[in-house]
Amino acid sequence: MRKVTILMVTMFILAVSIVFLQVVSNQVVSVNSQDLYVYNWGDYIDEELIDQFEAETGYNVVYETFDSNESMYVKVNSGSSPYDVIFPSEYMVEKMESEHLLVELDKSLLPNLENVDPYFLNQAFDQDNKYSVPYFWGTVGIAYNTEMYDQLEIDYPTSYADLWNPALVDNVLLLDGAREVVGSSLNSLGYSLNSTDEQELNQAKQNLLNLAPNVKGVVGDEIKMLMANEEAAAAIVWAGDAQLIQEDNEAIEFITPESGSNIYLDNIAIPKTSQNIEGAHAFINFLMDNEVASVNTEYVGYSSPITEVMNEPEHLEDETYYPDVEVMENLEYYANLDPDNLKRYNNIFLEFKISL
Ligand code: N2P
Image (cartoon, rainbow, N blue to C red; front, side, top):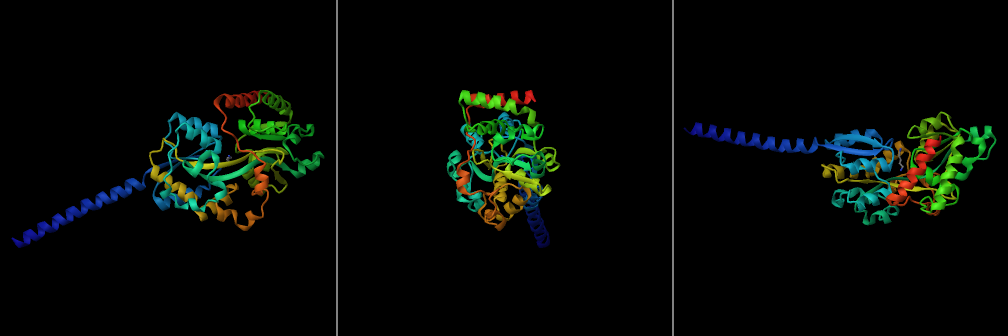
């Protein structure tokens, strides 16, 4: 009788333990095997870091890319994709926040936020970094091939206006972005890249139509490969891309026109569509880790806002990609234009592209 009782008690304990273990392991599996939908700019992460994050956390990252703030916005706003992490530039953070499209960040899940240089925190577009943290930053400028310029016997460019030189016929590549292209045209005329003045915008449009003979193409991320292969003598690019082109072709130089250009700060945020807010915080925190940010910066070529990475010797002395604060303050962030003005920029860009 005693034996039977002992056997029954043992079996009961075993059964309870099995159920307990199943519950625990199920929880672990269900948390850690969850999908995490990440929506980033093209060529904007070292994908080995995604593998590392998956191995460390068990999350399954579903990774997709976009090529402009505007296309990302349309997709997120449509609510048709369950993105957990997105990478809007500063003006887009402001727009999305004002439209209640972003989730407020839980700072207790972001201890690595202390690794970010204070210069990039608490910006006007997102006071107290309530909805976003910095990812990479940089300027827009001109990548040019010194050997091709020497052959054409023209001076190296110092401002956007130099791209209108008739000697550059069929030799200029442009980024496929309305703000970048219309902004550079405005800058080349000495106007703000956020102008909403009717006359200035008309001039910028006419100016772009005049640039058409020099334009070899309006392209996306392939601009790096085209410049490295010497398909054009000059291109308007994001600084980080110029750095990668230089690694493939030593004749390439890059300048940010001090007479006027764009400085951007790309950020990481969680859209309201997120079904995995905890995973999203884990991923954001991972990207702000000093070691991870260093590896990522080395890979993508853009400028890091992480203090320790900025202080790495090769970056401290690098005035091209880490310009002095005085230079940076002469540059403009894109403003969050109202829908009517944004439409005007898009229409100018479209008319220009059709004219090519
Ligand atoms: C990387 C895209 C950089 C985005 N290919 C600049 N805002």
